[in-house]
Image (cartoon, rainbow, N blue to C red):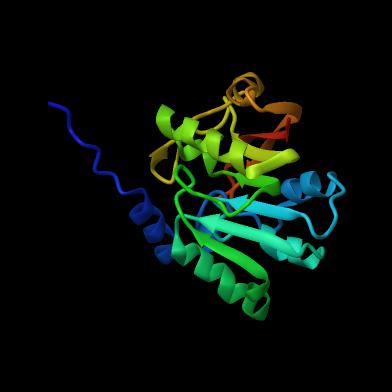
Length: 209
């Protein structure tokens, strides 16, 4: 007899963002420098549509608004996480599109110039959900648009926030996306957590054909 998986992903992340402060989670960055650099290297107009997937309470949206980007969508499965960012941004939050949804099954509105995903995609470990996510970005990124993704590398953790994760290499990420994307570049980078531990990430930039 098959035992049904009773794990509630949304409940898990709502609990995280209602019980922990930003400096109490390993993925926190005061300034998401690498993500910002990769976005700025694209030399996009300020009207470009940018989608930040699985953002949690990341400070990326704050920085994008400061740089003058006018069409930013922020998605996370946790409403509590997004409410924390809205409170932080105050009046500026009205200039952002907020979406509470599960990355594996979301239906984004329209097509985007950039889809950014740092430390979210690697939590999908079911092959069907991974394929669903790939199909979502294939539909949601404009031809010529960019997918920026940062996951744990093969040298990174095997678990995070008490959950198993998928580790990726440059080769495995490229293979996963080869149907619709060309690799621009990949690099590994050590992230120092608020607890002074080190996590190795793989950052990749892909261009939609």
